View 1 (cartoon, rainbow, N blue to C red):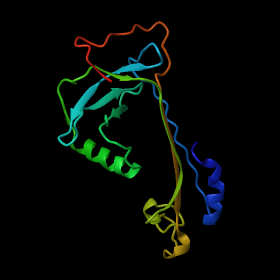
View 2: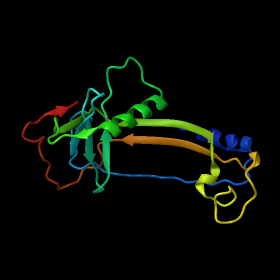
View 3: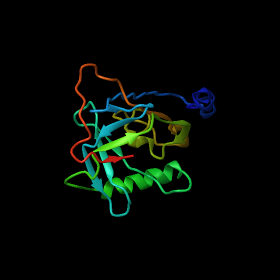
View 4: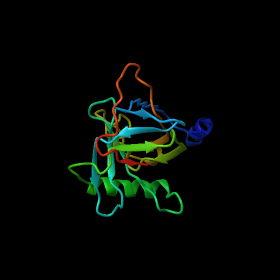
Length: 185
């Protein structure tokens, strides 16, 4: 899946003097998820916005954390999946120019099933390791020698995203799709 089996060999090729490893694991629950027969689910839209150069609304879906939302940008009409860099640049531009709307055009978003996205491990060299202000890179509080090619820093990145209906909450009353009942599927 993530290509982690090749990570030790990739690191050995770089011959690092030091290694720092970190992991971020985020687990959130949708608020107001409605299970559908056949494995799909619907989630209520908390807020929405429009972008002048994107044909669909941008949706904000609430999670179990008060100030954490999942932003969903519908993307259709392309004959192939864009590269990760192209998609990142387009999504960044869409988010920067999205304006909120008073009332979301849809009350619910429908997913036919779980979503999984996994990316293999990638290693890249940092252009300016001193900017991280870590000891030994020239940016920390301890004095260090002038930068040289031997003080390169590399980052290995890998990611996994899994979106599903979440856990059912026994005893919780479920709401409908709202007065209009409009669903973006």
